[in-house]
Image (cartoon, rainbow, N blue to C red; front, top):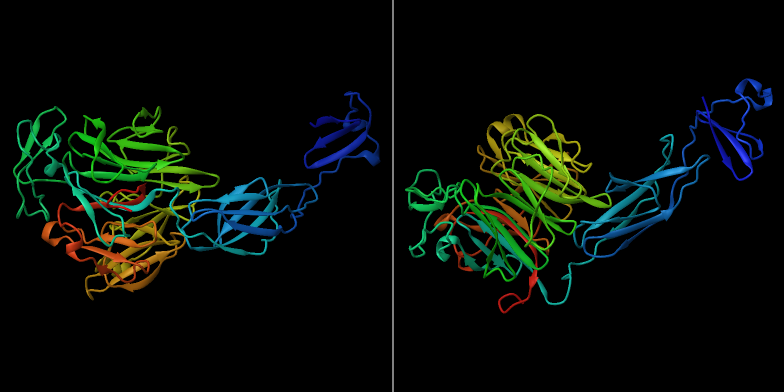
Length: 510
């Protein structure tokens, strides 16, 4: 069988890999193959010639997070159909044109790029010459905005830093405010203490608003299963959004100054599990479903979210768009390119095990990474969440007599994880560019929940509460940590996560 095409005044026969010119004319009455002369015999030709090496690759830093690439097209005996783009030796995307915008990069960081051309038969050209380009310094996205770090914790707690994590202000929580989620009607606000270590020592009683609308009194306050459990925070469009509640009713609250919060959305069933921002929209997860919003106020349920609620979530730039990924119970990942339409993928066994308490997926370099304290492994995806690969970080004796941190991070071009050796008392920072190969360096602290500021500094907590709560700051990507003086913040309910962004300048944040 063959197809025919009439182009201008020429007629071609297309058969397998061969394109044979037959002659001029406008008729579609082709002769059968048996009637062709010997000189017109069709010979299948398999194209094995690769395209030429792309030349003239240039890289232009557009902002603190974007580099634009362009290059001269490759040539090929048949035709070039696509180009692979490489960053720091890793393929990050495939494009059909001869330009690409690389987004989601780290400020003041150098990246090395190369490209290769492909034809329809998947013949690949040699890699182009490499070019290196450094992203611009961080600048506020518009006049009047200031960078902040937001710490979220138990019992509805938030506090912010406007000076790169050095001092912390606007400490608040549901119990201090008398929120209806933890304070029955007619009762005055009352400070409570969570069960900090599982022994109940020093803990007070506390209330939580149950699913049936009644208030449940816990004689020993379990802040990890209450309406005040901090489940997610994001800073976008000049507003801080934080969601709370796990095992009781919950609420999404918002603030433009980190001091005065207002409820944006109530969840009457069993609280929330996370919140993200990407592609110009917010994505909010409750225990079973998810919702999207453009303005953070009006929310629309996603029509086909597979459920249940997400243990760990992330949004990251991938290709010319982005990906939302969510890890759920049962070793399943949900993936979406728009936050509305979702599909499920099954990663390798144990990929999502051991992340339940961390509830964090680190993203960067077009890659998503989770770590498992249980197995000492990382689980990474470099194709937009469609496939995942497990890689060892620590194993054998190291895993037997030590512990891998539960909260991976990404800062200054590298994925970060922490390990503590019980035998020697030594902490290590593990780093990786691709989430697969990890390098160990001695560190003076074991990571607890952590985050990175808009200026690249790392902030973390030791995981303690009240008089045993301490904050640390690192300016060398997690090698050296300096304890922040306790006079610079209020020791209180435990922190669960840190996120950064921009809010309007105010009298306390200038």
